[in-house]
Structure formats: C-alpha cells, structure tokens
Amino acid sequence: MPLVTIKLCMKKTATVLLITIFLILSVAICLADENKDHVCFRVLDSNKDGNVTFQEFEKYYGNDQKKFNKADMDEDGKLTHDEYHDLLGHGSSQNQ
Image 1 (cartoon, one colour):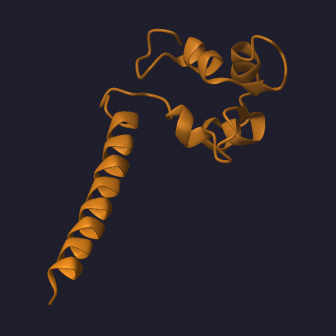
Image 2 (cartoon, rainbow, N blue to C red):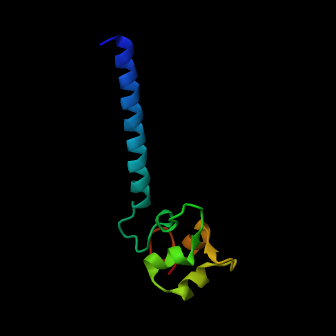
Image 3 (tube, rainbow, N blue to C red):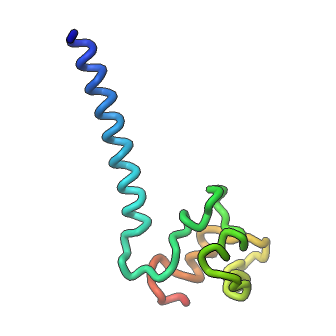
C-alpha cells in the first residue's frame, strides 16, 4: 500500500474519531447532572430552531400550560433557552 494512501486513511480515521468524541461529549454535557429533574433544553427543541413551542414542551411535560406560560416571560408562545432555565434551572429543582 503506498504511503499516500496510508496517510489518507489515517486522516479519515482521525476525523471520524474526533467527530465521534465531539458527539459523545455533547451528549455528556447535556446529561452531566445526575440530579437533573427536567429535560435538557436541546432535547426539548426537537426542530432545533432555538425555541421550544408548547407542542414540543408537552411531549415531555404533558399538558401543563400553566408551567409553560409561567416560563414564557415575553408571552410570544415559545420558550427561549434563558426562559426555560429561568423556570427550571440547569438541572436542579431550585427554581421550581
């Protein structure tokens, strides 16, 4: 096998390995707190638009419109990352 081919294979392997490590770390960061009593914002935001609609919210919290409205400070019908975490905190029950 020529040296150039070996180097190319090593680059591809390294790239795949780095991507895999990145994805694993991303999930680990989201799930890092074992005491978390709510769903990670990134999991709730199923269409990845940076907001959580009530339809996305209710998939995990049921039909709790009161909790959703309490978090929706600007009353635009969707939760931003900050609104969500202002209500639920970052993995603790301190803000519930």
